Length: 575
Image 1 (cartoon, one colour):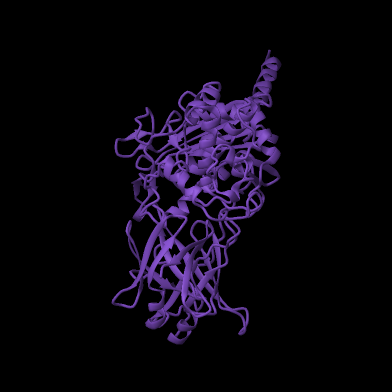
Image 2 (cartoon, rainbow, N blue to C red):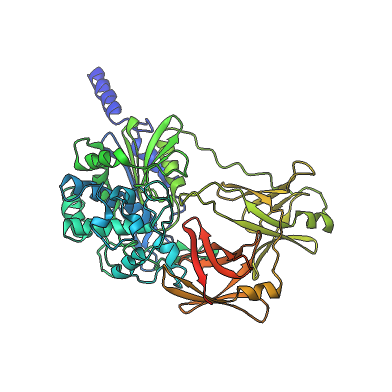
């Protein structure tokens, strides 16, 4: 009798063996999850996580709040709005399904659906839209030149007119690469023409209902009242939380998805079934899918990223902003689902859960020693450290155009100061002769110079584990004299946007950009003959770079505005 009981116990242990390999499996996983998600509390946004192995749910935990204001806990049934790029997986699958339904072909020319598109786009296909290789300008980045916020409403006719008016491609059609929300906005309109129904209705009928994802949907109207729909939050000043009310309302922004952790269990199940229509659609997409060429590893444009964790390869479902909602390790038949109503990158959280399940030791980021050493630095040495430092950053997901970022270091009286803007500076705390730290965060600034002939360098170790290399620029910021600045004033016109702006000099001899729809902006002189223009994107500001162009007589003909998703947009000077 005793031996039979032992056999039953061993069999039970074997069947319940999880990624942690413990008999008290649920308690072990719960302890791990409680530690990983300890930052989500009763006064914070929420998160739900589900761990599945070999088709069995082995952990299911939720933390924080769906509504901080009304004290509503976050649950697995809570609906959250995925960020925009996460919606690419769903709309891409819709395109593959419509092909299997005989409604379209992925090699169809986009002009077959919208003949007024510019002549240069005559050979662009639906597949090019899926691959972000169309050459169509990004509506968000470009229209930000004319709007006070990316959240301004853009309707279908305005969006199409924006595409119809584009004089030249942003990148070489079918060959170049630039992440463009216009591609997926146009894709949605094509899918609706091909199917004869709104994309949200098609997805409900063709995808969500067959998978029994009862609450999931492609969202159309942000003003809809939807049961269990959580408020979204972002982090404000002093680690407080603010409501996220900045949804982009345009064809390029209206394909985002509402879903829940419960519904994503069914989505995950469809992926593990090789005969499911979702698995078939993904196989079709991978036939011609483009790996984002500016990123290391395999990052498919439709939102599947292959991440290496130890000896394992995880397929992570997430967009370019690192908001993973699903991760699969087929070798271990492991799936992790994670959804949250906090708009903050959370790949590190997903990585920690996967690493715990796979028994991969995670090491905290190595930070430099912050012990204060007895070292003095005189004013002359402080002056040598001051200057404009350019970040040595890799290419981003956006394009092959490098992103320009700078940190300005100035020497005050006996102190080294980081200058973010005229009204935003930070005095650093000295740790040693060449080492300083942020007075509030454990960010550490270390200056060094390999030899007397090399450029001064700066390494910033951030509190979240990033290491940022910078190099002091050779040319300082030089403001042109008033006479040269006066040549730049006048009225300018963009034929693409059918939009005018005016450049004037103010009483401080600053070049001011005046637009009828946006508050005035200062055009700041920068290095290498460029000017810096701060561009509002709703949630944050970004930097665009303006360069003026001249004819043989030295007269200004036009200027161009550039950043990784704004390829030399042209404004011609009016005579």
